[in-house]
Amino acid sequence: MKTSKCAPGLLLLSLSLLQGCGTTQPLPAPRLTVNSCPRVQPCQLPAARVRSNGDMNMALDRAEGAWAECAAVVDMIAACQAKADQ
Image 1 (cartoon, rainbow, N blue to C red):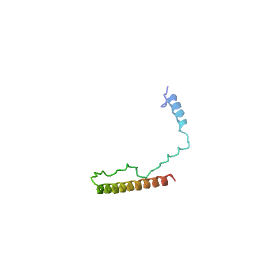
Image 2: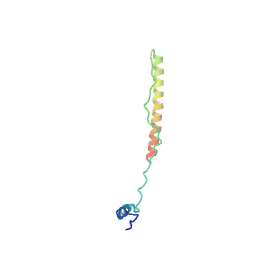
Image 3: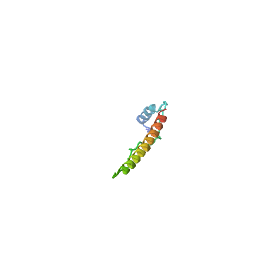
Image 4: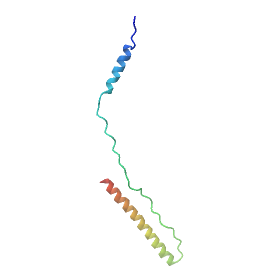
């Protein structure tokens, strides 16, 4: 009696597994979005030690300058985000 090199059970199993290897449409690649806008950072105002009216005027000028710089950064980030949304 001759024995075959391949048992019929294994052959049927491998053929049944090959049914799942049919050609199908590949899944679409995920869409990558890159946000190149800088992150928003908290505004920092300079500390002030006011002892006279002159010091108060100088502290006010420095605070207004710091607010102007912060507003410019926020405006730039808002424009960048608006451009990225288009």
